[in-house]
Length: 491
Length: 137
Image (cartoon, helix red, strand yellow):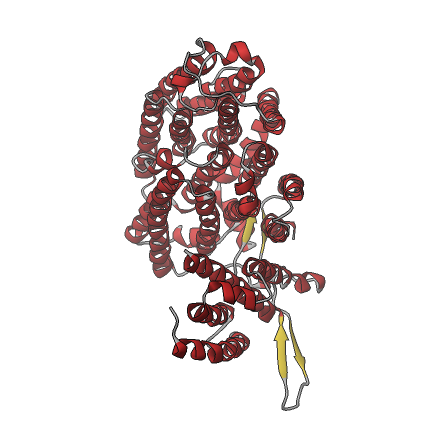
C-alpha cells in the first residue's frame, strides 16, 4: 500500500496548503516538512523494491489488465527520491527568492500539484493514466510559469503551453492507435502482447508518435525550441524546479517505453535514437556557448545533457542504462544547483546578463564556490558525479562498439567545460564593470539551500560506488522487461 | 448589463439548477450523469447569477470561497479511498452499503458516490474561480 503514498501525500499537502494560503510562514515551513516526508517515503519504496523485487498494486481491486496498475521498479524509485530531494531544496530556497505576492498566490500548492503529477508519471503502469499524470504535471507547470503575470512570463508561457499541448495530441493519438490495435492499456499487458504480435506497422507508427511526444517534452533535437524560449522567464526558483524535474520525466518515459515496447526493428530504433542523442548533445552545447544570459546558457545546457541520457538509452546495455540513470540523477542535482547559484548571482548583482556581472570571486568567494562545484560536475571533472556519469556512459559506448556517438559525447564534454568557464570568467573572474546595477543582499535561506545541494553533489561523487550499484540493478530491470511484465501480471 | 428578464430568470434558475445538479450527481454511478456534469451545472447556476447581477453581488451571496470549495472537493475525493483501506481492500476499492433494504426507500450509498461528490465540488469550485476572475476583468 506504500505505493499510493507518493500520489496521495502531495494531494493531501496541496489541500492543506490551499486552506492555509494566507499564513505565509506556515506555508514555508510546512512545504519543507512535506517535501522531506515525500523523500522519506520514496526511500522506503526504494528499500522495499530492493528487498522484494518490483512492486505492483491494483488500486480499486480491479485485476491487472483491466484496472489501473501502480508499479515501482528501482528506476522509478530512484527518480522519485531525486525529484523529492530537489523539491526539498527548492522549498528551502523559495522563501528567500520568490516575492511575497507570488508566494501567497498559490505557489506552494502548485508545487505539490506538480510533484503529484511527476510521481504519478513515475509509478503508473497504465498508458492512459500516464497521460493523465502528464496533464496534472503540465497544468501545474502552466500556472507556475505564468504565476505573477509579468509580460515576459506570459510571452514565455504561451510558447510553453502551446508546444506542450501539441505534444499531448501526439501522445493521445498514439495511445488511441495502440489501444485500437492491441486492445489493452496496461503497459505490461501491452508489452507482453506485442511480443507475439504480427503486425509491426501500426505498432511502429504509434511508437513514432510516442517518440515525438516525449522528445518534445524532454527537449530533444529537433523539438527543443520551446525550452530556451520559456524557461528563463519565471523566477529562478521555479526555473530550477522545472530544470530539475520536468524534462527528466520525458526521459524517464522514453526509457520505460523503449524497454517495454520496442520489439520490432530494434536496429532502426537504436541508430535513430543514437543519432538524435548525438545531435541533441552537440547542438545544445553549441547554442549554450553562444549565449550571454546565465539563464539562457543553462537552459540550452539542459538540452545538451538530455542528449547524454538518451545516448545511454540508445546503447541499451546494463552498463549504458546504469550510466544514463546515474547521469540523470547527477544532472537533476547539478543542473538545479547551477540554476540556484545563478539566482544567488542575481540577488547579489541584480542581473543575469554576463555583460553587467563581474568581480564576484573577489567580492564573494563562497558564492563563487557554490557555482564552481556543480559547474565542474556538469563539465565532468573527477571526483564530482558528472565525471562518473560520463565515464560510465562512455565506457558503455565503447563496450557496445558505438565509437561515433562516444566521440561526440567526449567532444561535447569539452564544449560543456567551455561554456561553464564562460560563465565563470564573465561573472566571477573578470573585473567588475563600471556600470553596475544596484547591489542586493543574498538571502540566507537561498544561500543555505544552494549550499546543501552543492554538498549533496559532492557526496554523490564520493559515494559513487554504492549509488552506481543501485543504478546497475535498475539497469538490469530496464534491460530485462520480462521482470516488469511478470511483476505486474503476477506470472 | 442590466436586464430585468435575465435577473428574474437567474433568481429562479439558481435553486432549480442546484437541485438538478444534485440529482444528476446521485444518478451518475449507473446512469448518465456524475460528479463532473453535476459540478458544471452547479457552477453554471452561479455563473448565470453573476451574469445577471455582477460578480461582486454573487460573491457576497455565497458563503464559501470557490478555491476552498475546490480544496474540500479534493479532500473528499482523497478520503473516499480510505474506507477500503480500513476494510483491508486495496486503496480506492468501491465499498457499497444498502440502507432500508427491501423497502420502497431502498438507498445504495458507497465510496464511488463520495468520490463523485469530491469531483462535483472540485469542478464547481474551479469553474466558479475561473469564470469569476474572467468576468471581473
